[in-house]
Length: 107
Image (cartoon, rainbow, N blue to C red):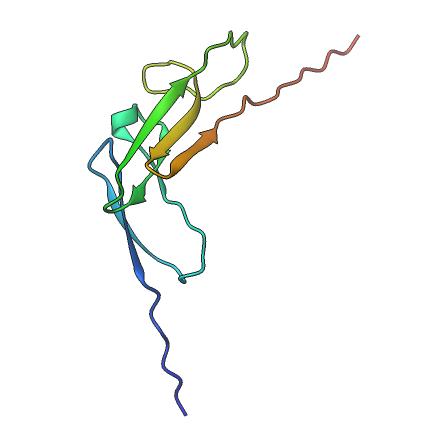
């Protein structure tokens, strides 16, 4: 006996800062986000929002001195500390932590 497979519902995504759109197929109980390198945010990896959602997505520039830290930079070379998504029901933030580095000296 063949068991029919139920298709996962389509989720349509849009970017409020550029023209990129996407469609995903996930089970209804799956938590999901869709990210892309956004032309409107100078190449920073930014989240998309479900189609029809009124939202603002913006890059937040680092306000501290980077002192040689390896940090995420936008297409203009500005250090970016986070991407913030603001909707009517709240705010989400994706933070870009600096990368730790070390050096070894042989004396």
